Length: 332
Image 1 (tube, one colour):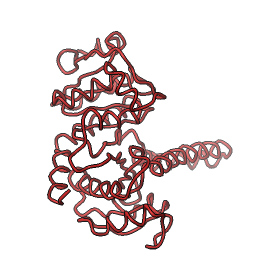
Image 2 (cartoon, helix red, strand yellow):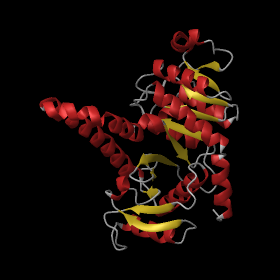
Image 3 (spheres, rainbow, N blue to C red):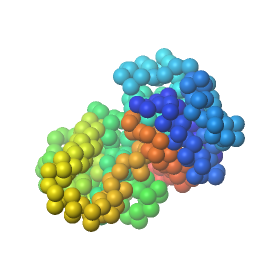
Image 4 (cartoon, rainbow, N blue to C red):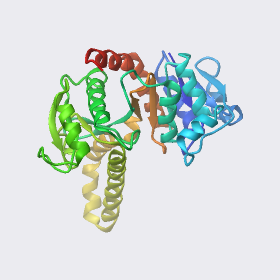
């Protein structure tokens, strides 16, 4: 299995991307990776791995799409960029999928303009698995489609349901719509119209949920439009970092807290494992005709390895094919 990796995308590229690729190749025997980017920048980080030419293949691409560049324009104009070339490898079936920690908008634009949408899907959705009290909750969309129509939210609900069943193994995922209240009358016109559609969809729709329901785990799939989802996701990340910093600050002030901390270390390690985004690694761009995985822009080697694992798992479990099949059966 060959997966294309945008070696130049992300805050710590190419060094951490290359380290993550080496880790992934060491962990998965069936995996080969195409590191796409500037060869002179990539080679120093992989030359001594013993994997070049065997499990790691360097694919030249002399341009890089910056994190602050206009997404659609950059993906159209920079045809020799690492992201564009990686996407082309997916479109041509040379690669089974691609992974990038680069510009989110450019990844979405590349997924639509290069890889192409699944028939019947108007706009793609980024679905991120979030740890909750008693389950993993997929929040979709978290930034792929900002100005949504009701049909977009309906399609996100269908794709989220398929993903949780076929990839995450949840037998009958509950699907909810994010709103400003649980009552049916809550929400703006978009939410009201989307609710009518999802209510009649072939999914286990449980109605509206509010923001506080997500970490509690009141649904397996929570559907929202991309602007709200992106703000919510970053708020969750920021809250986690703030709590961690406050905890350290208070701990340093109190002697007995430091003593008690000795007994809490195993529990805190377990909690860190559950909530560490590096374990999840990547977010699938659902609705495009290929395995396209968006890794966190700050990804270091462990998160990159995990994102590649997400892509591999998505390909093995035929994620795209399952979505196509089930949407076709549903008449979309």
